[in-house]
Image 1 (cartoon, protein in one colour):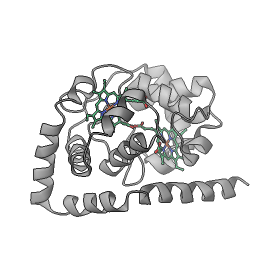
Image 2 (spheres, rainbow, N blue to C red; image 1 turned 45 degrees about the horizontal axis):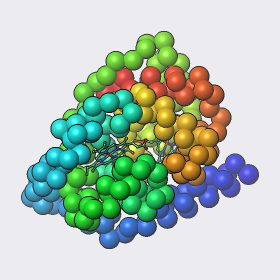
Image 3 (tube, rainbow, N blue to C red; image 1 turned 60 degrees about the vertical axis):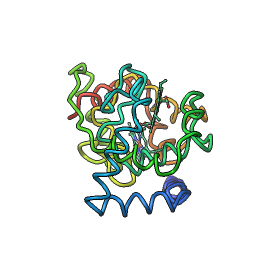
Image 4 (cartoon, protein in one colour; image 1 turned 90 degrees about the vertical axis):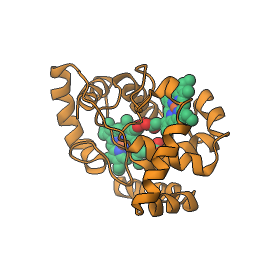
Length: 206
Ligand code: HEC
Ligand code: HEC
């Protein structure tokens, strides 16, 4: 049953990545071309002036409940922008804002934030040690040993503590605010204490 659910989950994610094949394909071709990539990052920097009010000048956010975008996987950023646009991910402000962005601006913003460095943050050492074990058991196989993600999965290292806690809980509790089959399965066994420990561990990772 568990294997079946996981297999189903993989279909869902591959489907959701394919939901905007044109933009994701274009992202890959821009990434592969150094000159186009540099130009897109610069255009993204200009386009980000409004986003900076909450996400910070270089994607390090100004409040704990707003996610850092610095160093995030650009395919993931594009996918989340698409999800806000379609209403699959819910946040009243982000859903309204994303609608005014053109496809090319979305791509430039994703590449700009992905190119920004992630400074290390502080967290409780005891909680982090407990979180490290839970992460290795339940999360590392997708998000990577160092929680830096890859083409398919988001970076979690250095993310804001409060935002991590809220997001993990939203997936686990099936609120519909964030829906993803893989994350629903992965977070199902977590107790509230595990969520706190995981968030401390991830927030302080470089
Ligand atoms: C008024 C504050 C505010 C502004 C301005 C803002 N955002 Fe956000 N953004 C948020 C909040 C809050 C969330 C987290 C919502 C949640 O809890 O799921 C978010 C989430 C995101 C995410 C998902 C990140 C992740 O790790 O999943 C992306 C991508 C994003 N914003 C991009 C942008 C871009 C691009 C702009 C500018 C065009 C922008 N935001 C402007 C508040 C803001
Ligand atoms: C089978 C693969 C898989 C496993 C295992 C997994 N995740 Fe994820 N995770 C994903 C995917 C895919 C997403 C993006 C989902 C979406 O689009 O909302 C994600 C998103 C997230 C996010 C949102 C990041 C952001 O910037 O908003 C957090 C936080 C997260 N995972 C934490 C965890 C934790 C903690 C565990 C272990 C308990 C875990 N994940 C296990 C696949 C996985």
